[in-house]
Length: 302
Image (tube, rainbow, N blue to C red):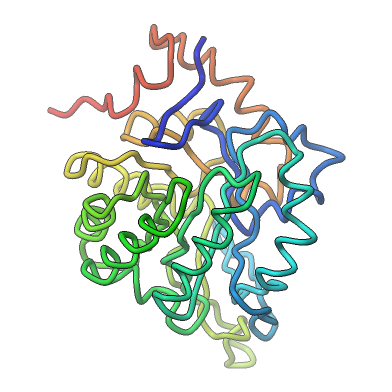
């Protein structure tokens, strides 16, 4: 069984990746997960300068999901390059580094700087964080998204992925702009904007009032976005949103994703990703498939 997948210039040993912000820097998982088996690891999003993130509370459990408002808390690119990347580069799985900037120019500088480092397989442009000021600006306007992706692709020596927000009227337009400007793949989706309230205190539970909803609750929305983009755009898709078992993985593949990222499930079931790799061959075989690409986008309509 051939589990390898190709996302334009990015080749992965299998389609099971772990999403940025949910797997730390892999070092935290080394005692319980064989990270070398993963299709790809996305460390926590990094920014040019250190960020302290948002005020607490930063996470709230809700029905069938998790609200988070971390605010891109990180130590900045310099610390990442000196303290985290050397370890990540030796893990054995492709390392896709998620970056976010305050401006288009900062995104491009980060993509160029980090993408030129040994051990970096690709850059994911986080165009869709709902928890910081301006975090979704480039993911909600097709023209701005296209220009940013194009500039990053031209400056960055490794493949570039665009992580998009579902908090738009027409996600297909944003994905099309990313594809036309050279994105090797689009990642669908980031979190849905939501909030939680303590009615007794008459106050929001999150310190930032609103945050991003992830987990099983958003899977139907993510599947819809993957399907719509697959039907309209010629660009590889990485599906994200509520994946918790092999059935979820197969649904995303059939909807049109070539790979998936495991996010919220890493918090309550950190060994899920490697189990999914073990279970994937049997699921593919049940559809008489011999490789992942045999079933990608095979949804039957009508």
